Image 1 (tube, one colour):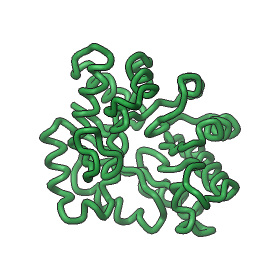
Image 2 (cartoon, one colour):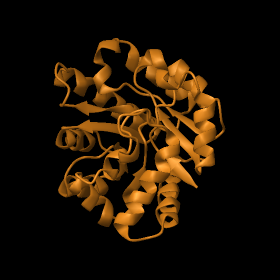
Image 3 (spheres, rainbow, N blue to C red):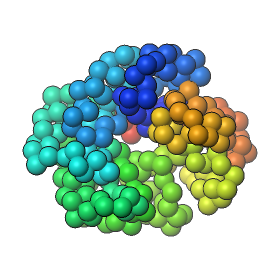
Length: 253
């Protein structure tokens, strides 16, 4: 069994064949998927997408690259959604210092607010940290009492070790399948497996065998096989360990 810890199944790219995408994932061994949100207007559609299958689990949050969508009352609305819907996590939230024009102070406002909500509801957080891992670590330490995953991790080994000490796991997906991603592949090869989650970030970040095409959760098997080869173990070892990690972190059924 595989668990896709990060899949945007509610994305418009899946509108034409969402049920088929879920079926292909199941056929590939992906029995559970965590579906993180991006902005408040998308939460109802994400809830509908998660209702397609018992193995789909929603998370609600406010993504840093969607600043233009966020409104002053969204943190209060998120509080209400967390209380009513009881999702498996808060997110996708975080910081993005890569995309031009995203005000760091505004990003910090939304991120800190969501971290506080995660602590209040005792939920893990799904964190986006692009060119911003140190700032994310600082926020996690400042708020305290948190756990979660930094998805599509691309930082250093030293940053990874700090995150592990803070109770965070790392999500690895399509980028690890590219041979040029040497630093990431070295991390995948020898990091403690209890801190590892697998993800696709579908429809984004396709693996090397699907480059330039729409990604989907069935491709998680490729990510798993790649990491297993880097570690010199059977794919079942990585599948079992990462599935157990995901089920523990997100309290999946």
